[in-house]
Length: 466
Ligand SMILES: *Cc1c(COP(=O)(O)O)cnc(C)c1O
Image 1: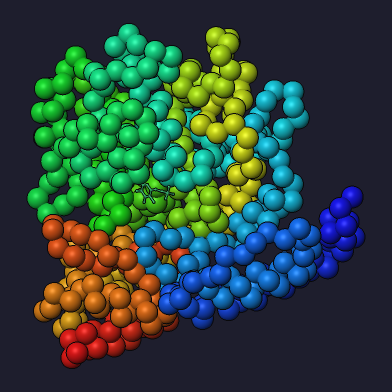
Image 2: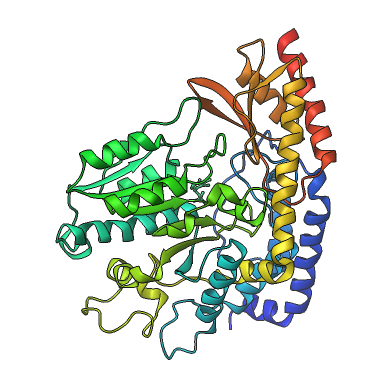
């Protein structure tokens, strides 16, 4: 055996102790680590003939890169929709690497990881109050969930036109409709051969990001005879607006379309009885996207695609790995290899399973309601503030705001982010530059809101008095 490998194996105990020490150091200081790194310049190196071994490599990573890392899993990183990682999900993720299973679920391969994955999907559906009508699997993120749901939708839509798209190729007779789709839906349309320019935009309601149902129905009438996929948003990233899912699902009976719901983070509103009505009707979807590395606070990369069990055959047609014609009932001959875009996969369900079992329904209800409470606090502060105004009401867990009396929103954001105490990201709403603060981390407390307010005011005064 190579000498460094041999040394490493012989001192595995010390290596894992060292990793534990470094992990604890990061996690216990996370609340105080900077949310911004001003200089991430590094010097490229040459790969040495002989390696350093793991102990020295750990040291080297710490010196060279760790200090440049930002506290994105910390309590005041409110850019994008960035979740944290709970202790249970970190434990599951660490063991995922240790167990190093390849979750393909090939029959007879003794693959318990696929059994755990199916069970995790069942538990997740219970958490989200979804019926047993869905099968699902883990993919890397909501982008791939949207891709997968729309891919099976494409196969369904092709069949309606008498075309097997997975074998014969794309049909231009398939129409995708959406009002305020996430950018990853547009990306999926380009990856799937629809063409990102070919999305049929449905109007939104006045001063909303949600779909105008009357316009949807008018466009469904106009496209009768074509094959339609409707992409519905359950939580937009700017204002956490929800399409009226029950109204859209009701139209399904009359117009027969594939209903895909992008509920990447908004799906977790189901954990909160006060907010679960936002999802009413979603159990009628054909496919649903759920991100676990956002509001579920599982480490990256973790997301789920749920597809109705009745579409099993379409899903296997879409993703089957062999060229042999598909034989038999997919539920009897189940293999993830023929069910999802990837072939070899890590034991990706394990961190989510750990989280579900460790915290249960009440744990996730607490995480979700804590985030909503923090967003409402920041929102109330902004309403009362003489410096800022809300760009949209705080519907759930995102605060979208701008400066009240100056057009220096971007300068303000830059100054505030460079404080390293709190981090937010810009967006455009109704043609105006705005700032988003998204709350999805279980660590965020009332203390963090106070710290943020102080930094916001300091940055405001700096920019205005300059
Ligand atoms: C984050 C997000 C996505 C994309 O998710 P990734 O995990 O980044 O791939 C898709 N849809 C919505 C609504 C999101 O918030």
